[in-house]
Image 1 (tube, rainbow, N blue to C red):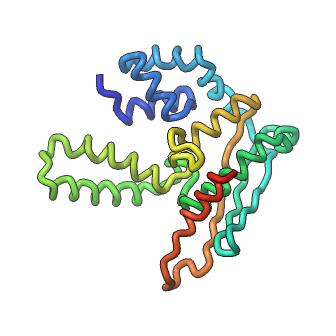
Image 2: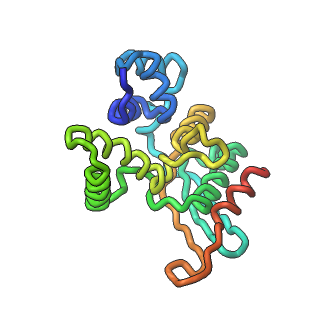
Length: 216
């Protein structure tokens, strides 16, 4: 059975498990959502769903500067100040700041993406598919798949984790939250780049940041 992005999204909403974990569970359950939920619960990957409703009002604001050229401020919230001082949590927050510096997301979650921006992208993708000569009956499915790539580029939680491309940032967040036992949320971030918006020579700062993370 074909595992669609819509099925993965539904399972993710039900369990708050990571995208890859949801996909694997759906493959294992042959597309049965309820069985996939049970599989994730058995593996302890759905436990974060209960925690996600709890208020996370503590946390930290992390600042990261790369070479005096890129600067990031990111706020990551926890339920207690105790967890905010946890070393693994601190490493996670630092990694998130470096992720933002390297891959320049625009939003934390896909829910934050304005509807008009989504619709504009869908229209572009629709025209691309039609120009490629694709039959109209499969264009919508193609758009759905290509929108996932769109979100992967601009949404922080949907991006591939820069330290492990097999994981999404959401997966890493879920793993640390399950391990620590508290709700953790990336609330907001701001990214600055010297000369941003001005005409300047091309420099691949993202590649520099990625290499720095690989060395850690």
